[in-house]
Length: 313
Image (cartoon, rainbow, N blue to C red; front, top):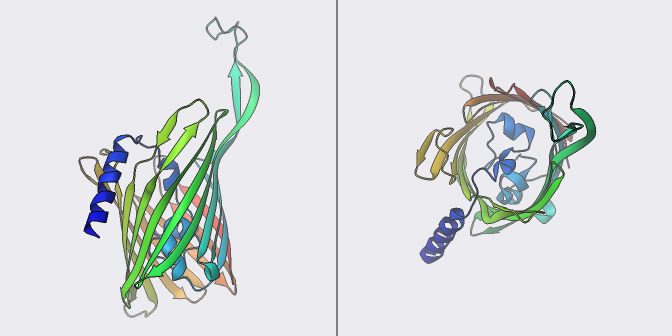
């Protein structure tokens, strides 16, 4: 076992030498509105509608199959973000399909490309295009010696500025609950490194990353309603320094914190901390339907609002 761990670490270090900085940002946007409201935590959330994205090992521990559709508009509606997620517990199978795009981008050119733009060489609109990223995650899981394990192959198609690319990779996840009110989750992002191939021959390699999360179940003092607390540490290997909480060499560390207050069987309140931004949200459940709303405070790029509709059976 020790030899296998050492070989895995060495492979990751060798692969990351050839990886491209920030190439994996498209995979960090998250999905599942409740998880975004919980500070972008989810490795130990057995109620997440998107286990294929957060931690495929959770498929073993979910008691109901479910589906969710999400729509979001960020940066004053410029960027559209849509997802469809689901979990089929009878088969320990989950999926997430996402689209991130900007529509109706107007391209311009000047009548005389050899002259500078000006009053006699005014740019004009000649074409409108859309640009988008499509990603498919497929989660599979099984239990080995009281630990749930899962793997998520992922496939990406990019269509940016009329240039296209495709890529593939895989994440590995694990989940265990050693105590009644305590659980641990682990995710290795891009254990099989995602590689994106562009039509012009360029190739992008995504850095491997690690996420570790702990969950504790407790009760609100005096009010006696359940509270779920999530503590997540995101570790990246891209040499990020300026925008991380702490870093050691190429390793950077960022916290994510979430709290779920189940104030009523049909109503929950979410709060969280995502890197340097506060998050909040509401969850409503009626019979087999769920409605979730998430808010993320961002003073630099305008606040983000997301909403989803789910169904469990």
